[in-house]
Image (cartoon, rainbow, N blue to C red; front, side):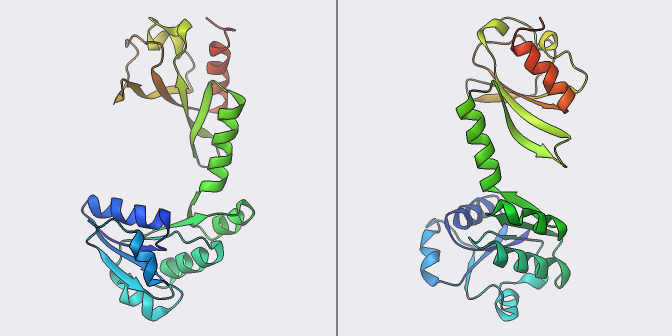
Length: 218
């Protein structure tokens, strides 16, 4: 896959290297040549210096043949314009944009862009950790109708079968991590204290699970 990463900051340089490691052809664009010093020495993709708003720079980066583009600079406006250009003018099939300011997220959504908002997600995650919630949200699909939650199995669940604890029809197991190894769990698996369980659920399903964790349902 031919991928363009716009912005060689901490996120862009890490993303470019990870894509390169996966065997993709990666070109990273930044207006400052010094930014490319952040790239891992083992990175063997292309670097293009120049303003990403420039048609000449984007075409030099290979946007006409690109399968995907990620605009991850620290400017929401720049990210939006580059991503919109990639989708509407160059017809890049897979475009992802980084969002800093949550107030601008509706604008990006209205443009039909795929968005990663580290600010919104990070704030929510920290809030959950500080509040001591037993159930942490790690992914939200659509408008939040279905989400993936992470649970650390409590002592009172030790030795119980997964199927006994997940009774709600709208709450399904996704992964079970034990001793840093993950597996696809089945109902007969016996839980151990400290296991990390990921489940997908609707609002109704997670409400039942929270009640179970609180001891209101055996």
